[in-house]
Length: 64
Image 1 (tube, rainbow, N blue to C red):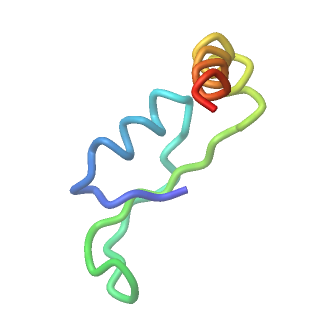
Image 2: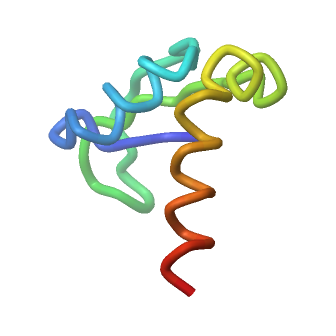
């Protein structure tokens, strides 16, 4: 996963869910800005944050 350095909402969300920054670089080909690359263990993140996700899923199902 990646996020522009100028978009802290994206990279702080990833970090709060356990993402680990693997590099930061200037992407002159696509984004034309500094980009932060992350790796995240999805299973670990889901298990640590299941209470949050379950509430969101319940709310989404109730709205339908």
